[in-house]
Amino acid sequence: MNKWSILILFFFVGFTANGQEEWTLQWCINYAWENNLSIKQGELNVDFAEIDKAQSLHNRYPSLSANSSLNSNFGRTIDPVTNEFITENFVSNNISLSSGIVVFNGFRISNAIKQARVDEASAKYDVEQLKRDVALTVANNYLGVLFAEENLNIAQSQKESITEQRDQIQKLINAGVRPANDVLDLEAQLANNEQSIITAENNRQIALLNLKQSMQLDPEVEMQLIRPGDVKLNYDPDELTFNQVYAKSLSTQPQILSNEMRVESAVLGKKMAQAGLLPSISAGASLGTNYSNKGRFIDGFTTQIVEQDVLINNQTVTIGTEQQIPNYVDNPYFDQLNDNLSYGVGVSLQIPIYNNYSNQLNVQRSKVNIELAQIQLDQTKNQLKTTVQQALADARASKRKLAATQKALEAQQAAFDNAEKNYNAGAINSFEFRIQRNNLQQAEVNELIAKYEYLFALKVLDFYMGEKIDI
Image (cartoon, rainbow, N blue to C red):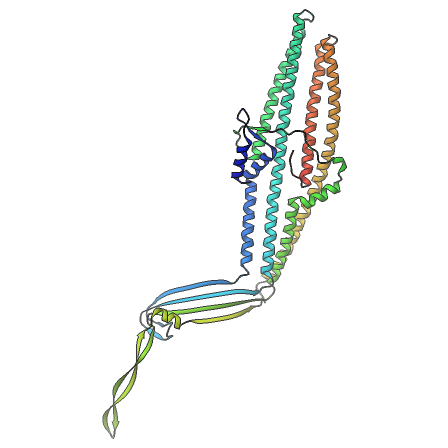
């Protein structure tokens, strides 16, 4: 989603009565994707990869270049048009076009194109992995806020319950049924409960700040999270096997796919290095012409009588002979360019014999790169195997913990209800009743913690199985 999409999204989301923006988990994730600096950097790496791919594609096309030079010459030099030595000042202009194409270079260009495409795919997988990591972090913090809000609600609900209990005891005291000191313990419980509410509110603010930081959102922005209804569970972790989860994670985790692309890129790099050991063939063509301000052409001839003294019978005699003198006329600029056109085509063969062993060393480097890329892939798979095992174990343990805390909460609720009846009837004292209330409060918190731990554990499994992270 681009920035305009985000703005339009928030426009239609609306606001609550107190001016706070309402956010779902997906909206939080989208905002984080839009503003996360690591994702932006990864997207720029994709842009670089696309540029490299475009360059590799254009390398197979012929090159074409034009050249022109304007020269002013002094002293003795060669006229580029007449190709004669002259000792005078003149101006010349040379124009040329040249083109070349690689006919064969050991398939270096073809492999470079393949490598560029693989590198582009790898860069895109890296961005996808960054997005999934950010989504998991945002989901964790989002659930943390919901947990803190529910914990705060429990504390506030307990305050209401204790206040109601105190008011009821106060009525009995006023009626003379209960002694006046029976209300003192409830007043103390209310004071402790106030502290619990303050602590719960602080925890909620900290959880909300952590969420905003993971989203790159201004801490001053007021936000209210949309609480999901009944969370639909896609599967039971006890019914999943490690091999099922691991196999799916191998085929869906972008980091695995990216590292596989890097191995393939290293293999193509080896083929490109090996091309340096093979002969290469290239072809070229050229077109050129030139101009000189001393350029002339013959426009007819003029007959002249040239007198010459000759010795005949020991006497000097002057004899006149006719000679044809050419009439030189300045040759116009474009006429010279047309008259002086020259063409050329050629094929060149380059055979590597010895170049300081650089080609052989490049091949060795490429082999090491393949091994490094393969090791990185194996390390990533081993790490994934460990995290998948841990995630599956955590999900199963969280499920059992939730079931246990729910049973404990039911038992504590029944015990509290019974204690409340006995306390109101005067069968137990305030100390015994407070113990039952504290036990119920702890059971509610334990059940709440277990519920969110289980929910997050399932989201982690979704993460490794390539599922969308949503609640």
